[in-house]
Length: 599
Length: 30
Image (cartoon, rainbow over all chains, first blue to last red; front, side, top):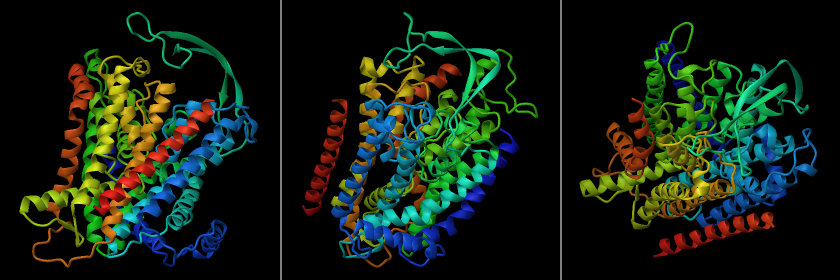
């Protein structure tokens, strides 16, 4: 590890924390319908949309109506995106004349982008037309992010209000989140990215003749896309020779901006943010990491503002940042240590002025180890899922830490909206357990935590690990599941565990060795993503429905303070203990064994 | 045919979500 590496991480953290209060304050004003400096431009558009949708902004919804609106909206969006992919061969803006996307892949992609996962079993430049990318995927990036933020707003109102059924209006929250927050930030970020060289064009791909033909090895695949294996289980490679290169281009900057801001993660190109046309410079890398964390971090301040106690927001942010910084340093440390097998062969893996050092397999030289580790941690902590390096090539511990970030439930910052409401559920659990320990009625922000609330909290904590482990087990006991593994042994196990962890947590990043574009993974993955999003959103809104009707008790001598360093430490402990109880056995079978075998 | 199956799968999932809403409401009323 180097001073330069820590400096890069440090500068990023400082800039992030400086943005939390101003952006958080702005978002609080947006969601409370207060005046903002963008009103003159956006308010007429907002009112026009309400007229078009026949919505009265002042009409509020109870938890059931809010939930049904979310589900209907999501279902219609999923079916629209599915249809767009299946019909793209007949539609305009398709210069490569790409045909219809395979039904299973289209279903997986539609579920993926509807749930803010953006898991991609395909390479964008060889599968999706410009129209599908823009009208389908990019639009979904905005709307799925705004939907997550809307659910958070309903939950915050449940804590802020008392003795009412009203949680706000889903359509208003969705519209305001998109128009006032995501769109303006995306425009700014897209322009910054274009200035650095991220492509933004509707021109067709460029075919260029190479100065000399080039040959490379690639894995042979079966008809279903899984890698062909020899009798010993090793992947069979073939030599491919080409004398031209097709440079894929397209309207990437506009998608990349919202990809990060909305913690979506779906790249325009297959290599995602490792591709030089998506992420050409260290500055774009810095901006992309910042973009994927800034809204989630700032929403903690928004939360504090809306419940009229900013200490609560700062406390939650502090807990998140402790875990985030620890994970970043852990990943950086593991990757900077390099591969011991290479050291044994006399390979120099020390950082110097001539090389980044450490484990550079799967990493881009323009980013190096520190920045790649920061990106990997940020993308898995926030449920973005974009990658600027290949997680499959990380050292066992270096790859384990991003996996653990997801195993914790995507609450270390987490997705826009979903991360904070996930963390607030942990707060409720922490308050409840603390209340049991000291023999007092558990209450949070004056609201008593009762049986129903704990039932919902328990559901919310258990649904994700249950389905991650069930789907992973299913893949491991079926031929179709095992066929997707690229690396044998514990690393192959980790590939599958990572895949279902990522999908169920709506992250979308992958250990790219897994061949996911098969009927098995497309279907089970789609189900995992849908469950991970909506079977968590529903109990969250039900919990909100319970909390909003309670009265608020004034703070007394026996009230457990939830903004102190002691509570922050307790909250961190609860998050880690729950994650460890659920996933330590699985981790022991994968990355831990691999680490012991390597070292 | 595959298209129909996947569309039905989507409907079935969202119907199941409706069932979860009903379950949560029953628990809330208890």
